[in-house]
Image (cartoon, rainbow, N blue to C red; front, side):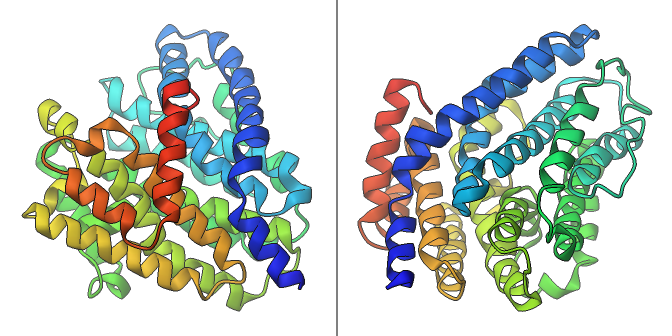
Length: 356
């Protein structure tokens, strides 16, 4: 009976997610928006504010993990918003400001790794970067993550895995922002160094999976839910999330941005599929593996809801239906029953209201 109640609750996540968590995400972002306005360096302030204004849906999406453990929502949410804000801010700094290179990108992303490992020191993140006076903004984000993690007694049992995912994320961000003449070769060499995955996925699929923060959020949520996390449960979670669910997440992001990225000459991992048919096959493979492996987790309904929520959220963006991709989007939504289609309608409505 208890299991059935948990399963029902996980399938009804949408209601507390929209009506309780979304407003709390906005409150957290308002605080960071205010803090960004106080950054002394005008360019850093501009990028911090832009990352919040244009990428808030990243925090909204990740915040579903705050509901994994009902009693820890107020602990998990500040961590999720702060870590995602670090991710989005650093992405803007690497994308939008010229005058830096690999050494600068590495130093900046040390903050991402430090945020998930309280044992790591606060360092001069802006070393080798053309701007540095952020008034302690990045330090404050890192320290907010530390305060949340300090409330989780069992976090030590998963810190090595969260740090590994954060390190993979950081490596990706460094390599993907290198000069065009270096970027692809470095990404391929990096993939080859992770030989355990080379037979299952392509190098661009690996890179996409490394770009997701969902694996970190899922691990931290698991730790919040049960202080003593067994190694087998961590292994099963990672088996689902990396590279499959994380790869699906970021590939959907690239899928909807194909035309925009092509127009601006920006890197897009979905564009490496040779044909639209191959791209659909790749997305379906990541979707099927994510769903199959989610069934082996202790809360399968929760993770399947996350998967279908990703489809609904990304494919409710009008960009998903341009460039002849409408049929692919529709087939992805209808692939595993009606739930994703229903969630898609909800997301369309939220977009009309400006909530998403």
